[in-house]
Image (cartoon, rainbow over all chains, first blue to last red; front, side, top):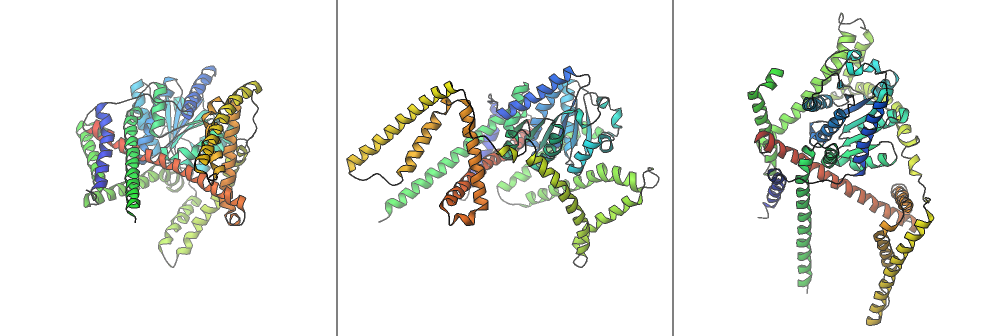
Length: 279
Length: 286
């Protein structure tokens, strides 16, 4: 029994994760301040765009990889629904090889649901290397860095880019990554120079290092992990994978807490027993 | 490729392969086995292969080979760009014991350009108007509505005073009953009790004081953690520095604990994603 103990724990964990899906358990999440601020920032861009002659773009920076898809994908889907429902044009860009293609798949999926079209609502600037130098070059002369979209169309012929002059026409940067070092260049160059609002989507592990950037005002909002995705889905009114996963997440956490308590009680009891037997 | 992905047979085959890969990886939970090892190697190989292919297709070929090297493909051909490729290939001399020094040339170029860029990055992150260093200078006194403050503080202090009196009464009773002196560490208990009462009455405290409390906590943490890292040697001789460094260590531990909690959540999210894949996409149990 003792030898197989970890396997029983794995089995219990597996059940705690699968049962909520089969039982279709779901519940309302309280909205945290960082997620609410992310939502408000998108709303502000939509409101400002309505008052402008030409709309500013939102830039979706796709720096996540298959290893972090589980947490980031639901966040991005919720944000894309928000962009498209508020008619905010957006562009995708990535500094990780897999990021732009993963984001393109999600955008196509959401666009299919909402009847939007590539080129008119959004475009994909593709994968770029050397983040620091690329961002700085984009700030000084955008069209030397981004010449064509992911499909090979010259960038100035993509309809959504018709009025785009340079990075000053980006109204919001939404950086999604599992690594906080990929957020920093946007803060250091784009926010510091143009005061462009930045929102961030990150994995649960990276939440703690992001809070100082939020409280200093260097980023304007963020959503962390599956819980952030579930909250954003709730705000947008499009429950998806995030909301679905939170019931399993909660049950699994209850199991972890229960196991920690049980182990401590067992250890405490054996300690007291040892003390009682001491002559 | 589009016809392949649109074909339901291929879609089904892809789903089954995905399920097989997932289950093979989870088989490690039972024990290390050959199937797990095989799929692990496939994953690593696929990841690396994909990165190499996409770097060539999206970066090197369109921006370097087609436009700079391949004569006739573009008017922008310039021999310097070919030389850059040779400099880049010097990196592989790391594999040679005798010629390893050649690999220092591209490494040196990268380190130099990185160091140059980092100066601007540090300024942007730390020293601008909302930089991390600038924002660490927080006001410890925040103006509040005096009337609201007095009302709330009166109530908070009344609750605190009542709590403290009860605590004193408890100690005196114990002393009277047992005929002993006050227990050791009474100050710590008193401070702890007072803090607990203040925390319990926090909702009564006006917003400005809450901000002041938050700011004090941030500044205290900053100073104590700096003490821990910078004055650890000094701390052995100075009691104040010892206390600050010890508190700094504990505050770091609390922060690491929060990060560890988030890590557990992140790992569970990966498991949940795989469960969603197996149940919903493969078995259609929705």
